[in-house]
Image 1: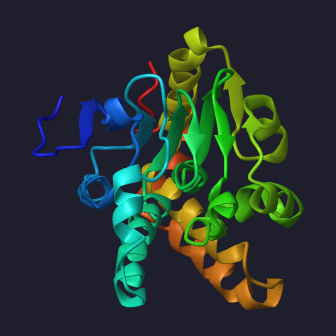
Image 2: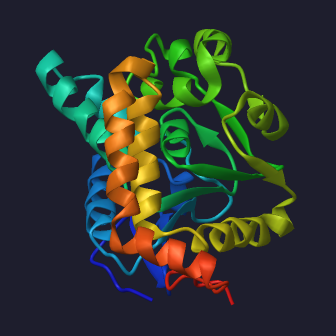
Length: 265
């Protein structure tokens, strides 16, 4: 377990797993510039730790996150355009840090998730939600749009669903979130930790450098034509085949043993 100088989040290490907890339960883990700055700092720090293989993001208490804090919203309503650009970049940086992490990331969605919180969920590799969780993109009802989180959310739910939920702001229940691709699994609340543990065990079979390379591969290939990535993909597989991890993977396969990185007992 780690003790961190954070006011609004908690970071708990359990072996190869780092759990990052949004910790403002008195306001349903709503975020402001302080929380987002601390989250960005924590993710940057964890990303550089090779001993950490999996990152779990969750909320403290009964909510994942209510999105933007009301007091923060009141403050930014009086900002100039330039101040708003700088402020929006705080959220953009935190979500990008999460999306770009070299480790496998899991959103443990323990309750309601509103507005910008969907960006955090969509930036994770996997999302597991309690059946009691619900989601909403309410920005349009305030006369604004979910701009900063849109690249991540649209990649998960697609343009068709974005035109529905971005334009109406209507509530999304957990089963619908599963159907449209926002989350990967929905379970009863009492089964949430077991479901997350199941994903952790799956990731423990995967080579850490291969996980990092897979995430970079997906990000690059998904937005490119086949011709644009042909050289990149052939070079990548060649590099990984001759890497230490690649050699260990092949050796363990032919020797019928677990590779050195496999932590599953």
